[in-house]
Image (cartoon, rainbow, N blue to C red; front, side, top):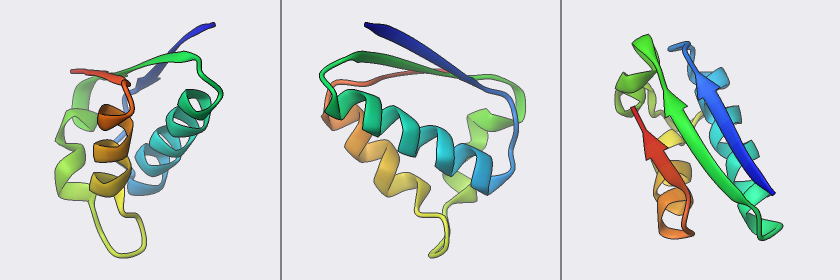
Length: 69
């Protein structure tokens, strides 16, 4: 299956959960595109110890996920 996840918030937990879901979908051998819209394009600055967004983003891209924004 092919999935598209659209993220338009800059709340760290929302962005973190989007990447978690995307990585879960990739682990099931499905295709995923994350489309970052509006304030979510600045996801890099939302990274923290509690919400390790950059780690999940790297894993997502290295496993074949497509990140657009």
